[in-house]
Image 1: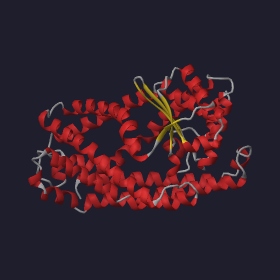
Image 2: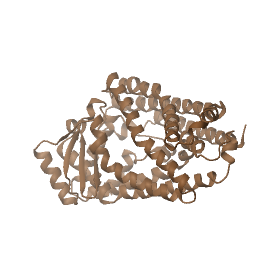
Image 3: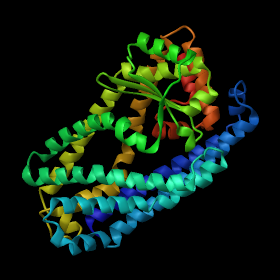
Image 4: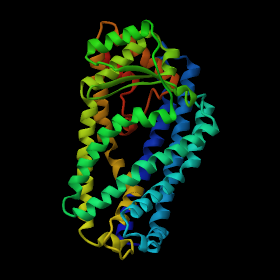
Length: 412
């Protein structure tokens, strides 16, 4: 065993142990919390409470299955010798930047394809058993094929550009890569609703009526000059409900899931939208992009340090020191071993943003907080969301405060 494999194996085992403990604690805490039925008695009956518990336990078991399966795949990559064998076999290809990027994309895509059986089980077994799945097998297959094609069109040129920067600017490529990452995020925000989303879903303008009048008035009052209020046909895949706002400069859109329109009152939808506009007004998207850019800068600098010597290639038993392909391949596969430990920090910041957006919504009208809580309770009931996660699990994994935490915060 090489030192590199030893380090990655320790990180892998630490992640598996930590996540297993958190999942077991969460399952036990959720299952044995006898107070939860009383806490939600005003909006959820005992049968639905039991369904939320069952759904939480089922998702918990699936998450552990996914965790162990992913760990097994990573161990196979690290210790089978497959990656260095393939890279050494294709030594003659490594003079071409686009061929290098193609190999990297094939590695990443191949690794991702290994999870398709689990994704299929999640969609057509777990989600279906709780009444959430609306997708068909043909639609699911079509979605997977489209995703692979889109990823190829996006990532192969990006990988090629990254290889070019590393080769042409060996001392400053990590700075250029960070700037490129920032520009890509901005570009993607503009392109996604125009080019990518329509390949999967249909967006239609919200019909004229009382709801549109209320949402237009709210957006104008809040300073969110929406170019369009659109309805997303999410019900063809899932029964889950949501809404979001997207903005880039003067291009601002409000998107409502059609499942939201079917089950929520105009006042509740208005309150949800006030919360989403709050994210925009509090500049949360820009802050997240800034944080992501800083994280990218640190990550690329770490890669630059590794590329300055031949240590990684020697650890992988790859004699080629002139290409970053081995490093990038390994990082793409093993990245969760590093990013996992930053979940608590990222989610803590995200929960703070949710509170800020709630405060913004509360200021929009005297009744907005009341209708927002009604909507949140409906969302939790409809989505069978866990109402009593273990505090450690919530702190580690929840990007949103729990329902009762938000209710307490809004009541102040």
